[in-house]
Length: 235
Image (cartoon, rainbow, N blue to C red; front, side, top):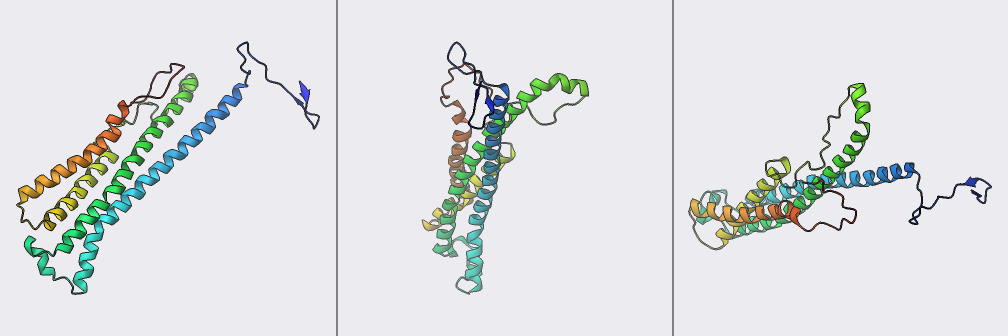
C-alpha cells in the first residue's frame, strides 16, 4: 500500500502472471449495472420512437382526408365528384400518392426502432437470466419465481403475428393502397377492383419484404468477432 496526497492508504491492484490486474469483483458488478442501465435507456428510447413513428404515420395517412374536407368546405371541390372514379380531380389522386409515399419514411423508421427494441429486450432478458441463475437456490428457499422472461432468445427477431409485426403489416397495406390508388388515378386509367387489388397487393408485398429482410433475414448476417467463444444466446 502507499499513501495518497491526503494521507489515506490506497491498495494497489495486484498483477497476475499474464500482466492483468487483480480487480475487485464489486467493480464487475458496477460494470454490469452501468451496462444494463445503458441498454435499458436504449430500450426505452426505441419504444418511444416506435410510438412517435406510428403517430407520424397515422397523421400523414389522415392528411389527404383533411385536405379534401378543407377543399370541400371552401367549395373548391364538389363532394359529389368523389362518388365516381372518373370524376375525382387529379390533384386528389396526387395528394393521396404523395402522402402515401411520405408514409413510407415513418414506416422504415418504425422498423428500425422495432429492431432496436427487440434487440435490447433480449439483452435485458440476458441480464435478468444472470442474476436468476446466481440466486436460484435462494429463490427456491423462499418460494419465489420471476414472472418476467429470462430467455435471451425472446422476443424473436421476426414475429409477424406480434404487436409490432401486425402494426408494420397494417402500415404497409395502407401505404400501398394510398400509393397504388394515387398513381392509378394520375395515370388516367379507369381500373377495375381486381386491378386495384393487384396493385395494392404487389406494393404491400414489396414493403413487407423490407420488414422481413430487416428483422428476419438480417439476423443471419455475419456476427461480430467472438474471441472468447461465448455461445450465441439470441434468436
